[in-house]
Amino acid sequence: MVFKPEPIFEAIDSLRTAEATVILPSPQGERFNFRIAQELSKASHLIFICARYEGVDERVCEELVDREISIGDYVTMGGELPALVVVEAVVRHIPGVVGDVESVWSDSFEQTLLDYPHYTRPEEYRGKRVPSILLSGHHEQIRRWRRKMSLKRTLERRPDMLERVRLSNEDVELLAEIKREEPNS
Image (cartoon, rainbow, N blue to C red; front, side):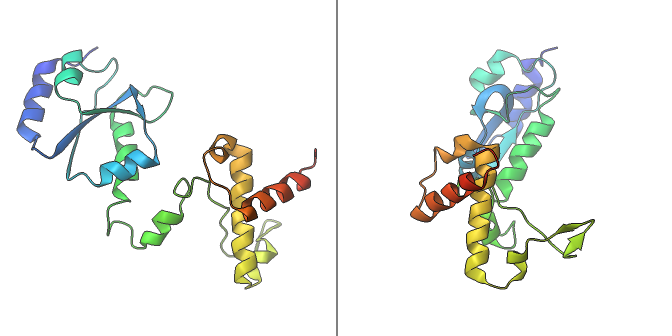
């Protein structure tokens, strides 16, 4: 099933302003990422066309859609959840949406590395303990541990990301430590 153009054209005509950006979540679109989320957060008016099944008549894409965005290399049954993913990622970059703007800047992908592990109380749960360094109160050692864990997680799960990041001398040193600590080294 393909959505007919007439109802979509009428809907967009009734909603569109000069500032509007019309987005079609689509597996054929550019792959959504942090940069696009930041860019879209500066827009004053976003309109999402959420198709189902086979999508929309191509004339909709040609005449109405400003951007096709893919949230990954898979297909969902409709555009609603991909649109929600984009909205969730975009709005957190709008000033005032997240209480502490620093938390947005420290999240994964902001620094082009995955985030370090987070812990809370109790100190021990089912035999698993919070790493002692985090309980030490030594801020520099905690900072270094977090950076090391971020590098380690990125190396293990998304090594492609390390190719895009400018590593500091400390990062190179921490990566060497991580590799020495690997059981199969």
